[in-house]
Image (tube, rainbow, N blue to C red; front, side, top):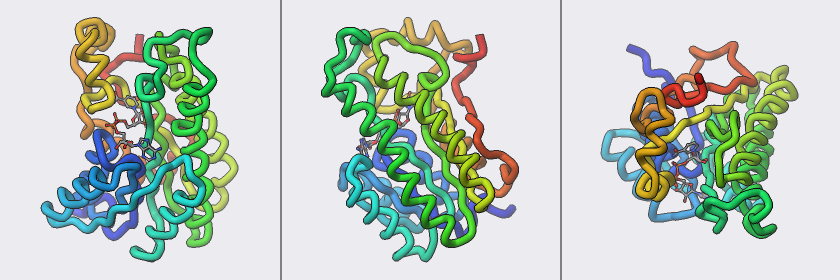
Length: 255
Ligand SMILES: NC(=O)c1ccc[n+]([C@@H]2O[C@H](COP(=O)([O-])OP(=O)(O)OC[C@H]3O[C@@H](n4cnc5c(N)ncnc54)[C@H](O)[C@@H]3O)[C@@H](O)[C@H]2O)c1
């Protein structure tokens, strides 16, 4: 059977952990050459070792998606090594707890926490897209997938900057899809529900039963649930799909 991403060059940000790592591995299984980018070099290295151990091809790049120079170098590294950029998965992100704003309401969050959240989870996506789009348009097309969240579709308590950033990712995805459709670039977003990764470990430890009670399927998703959706969005099988959000949430937003 033909693999979905045979011979394509794919970039994954936040590829050192959780959803980004799983997606890097599944993309490689489907035949893509992967550039795993992450803030953490050791984490990115670990992902490429897993890919290579399974017979895939990958390189690691250390890049902070909030730093313009590092994002420029990240996209350049993809093109230098693999000749082109076919698929970009903009997935790097942080939770409220990572910016010191876990559980805080709109009136309580500090400016510093707000700015950091928006810098990583929204401006970081825009910055990556800016450079990815230039590479893709120069070669006649490509596919971008951005990680939003159920928090991009509905409000969640105690996560206001995260919710705002993830809603912003959906708006940015739609706008980019329209702006760039004529140049052969498709842009979509994936909206994960609660997925079993290091990001949700703390929330699950604190209020796991409460969280599961809100999920009709009564379980957390696994990172591979998101990876499979992203691979389909990156593949030619979704060739007429652009500007949309694919929700993978065990029914969370169905009610
Ligand atoms: N896990 C969930 O339940 C869930 C639900 C909805 C959306 N998401 C989103 O999915 C994405 C991945 O989350 P995850 O659960 O795999 O988290 P994770 O914490 O396991 O992985 C996130 C990765 O992003 C990297 N990263 C963080 N800031 C970065 C930066 N500035 N530049 C480059 N890399 C950076 C981290 O080093 C880490 O490797 C995030 O955008 C998150 O908001 C997760």
